[in-house]
Length: 385
Image (cartoon, rainbow, N blue to C red; front, side, top):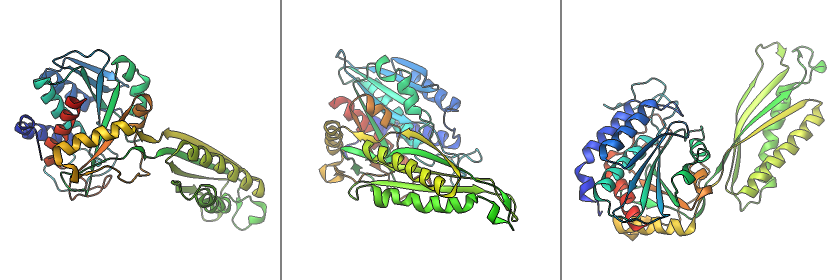
């Protein structure tokens, strides 16, 4: 692998920052310590401008190249937030905060981008400017949307934007990417059923929301199996069902929650439409009221085809063409980097981190050995663009 020697030289320094972030995880927009460390580190490196509070608590650093190139700013994005999970890994740098841990590699993403910022500030071997973007609240808070709505793209004149995500159980030294729809839209659904409560011994006078809920659970599976083209990708998962407080009472109401994932806006619209139709029919059949709260959280993440090729070509210069997968499978996982890609061309690439627990697993840990590789990719991408 063609790792930049300047980045390799400060690998241990960056790895210590990563482990410190892992020991002190923070959630969503409550990232005061993390954002302060990022901003201070960027200033210590000599980054030209450091802007805080973008998208509530995001950080953006601007690095200018040796040569001016008006109207050309490359954005590089990393996410900073952790997950509300209890860590189970026996590590010297394990989370020190109960119920919070970095289980998706965001501490590593932040570290790799800090390493790239250090190198780019030292060398400035590029034209134009780079915006290093440290985003809050990727894990369900829509931090990408918040930064975009706060003027991220226009304020800093970003013309292209790129992301990178660690990929467990893909060999170290391998990159993966695809063009087009890569990660799914993420919609959250809450179904509230209002029936008629009664004594459990007198079901004939009730409108039982549990029976209705059971019908709902079965019916929503037909959205994918009978309404969506089999050649398209979609999933509807109901994941909670809450009703009742006593074994001799038929409750008045029940609530179900879940998620809808699709890889195209058209299928997304179809899924919502069909859900509403099914629930209206079931409500009429049982004489109940059914309300659907349909929250469109994240859009489909769509990699620009030309930018995906650029990313793959850059990765190939570092690890060789045989170690770049250019048409990796799409996933029904979600990613709010999609909001940035809606506003300007770009792409997200995956970097293999070797044998590992899966993402969002209580024993997951980012592999510090890939920090120089990821940072070299960022640096070469900037120098190429």
